[in-house]
Length: 198
Image (cartoon, rainbow, N blue to C red; front, top):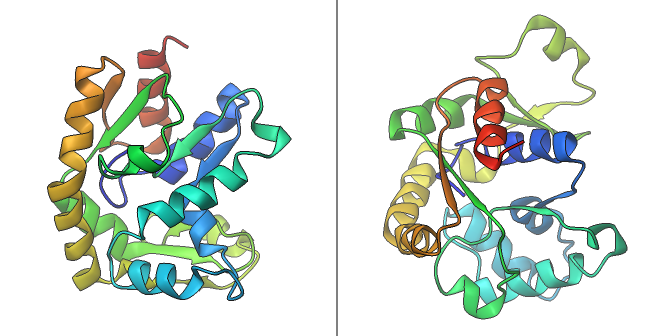
């Protein structure tokens, strides 16, 4: 969990490799929906405007994905739960919830430079990329529709208004791990692993 551009996808991927547990990115699942999906138009419209996609539909997409054999021994969820009502539609029974915390200034800086490769789907930051990384990117770098400044403001407002309740719930349950995610990814990963006792 965490605000936009806190590193959920990046740290999730690194954690997945380190622990050998598959990562399930809610956002990526939704972005991968095809136009023949019954909820495609509704989901795309919500995400493009910075709003949360309807949680009952997101829950169905997640449940269908998690039926696959590769998740039988566990998984890491990126982007679920975003609000308390999500749990009414799908509660997987979390062992731990990692909250990546960054300032709003960091959020805007990371998002303004974030680009996605149109071939491998990886996230890059044009302000942080080395020349080699830029050269080795297999495709064209594009900006996500929900990464423009006005939409980011909407997403941050939603995060503050809706996610705080869920954060407090996981804290009461004793499963929330708060991680300062301001530093480089390798450093953040080590903090997460330390908190997990790995």
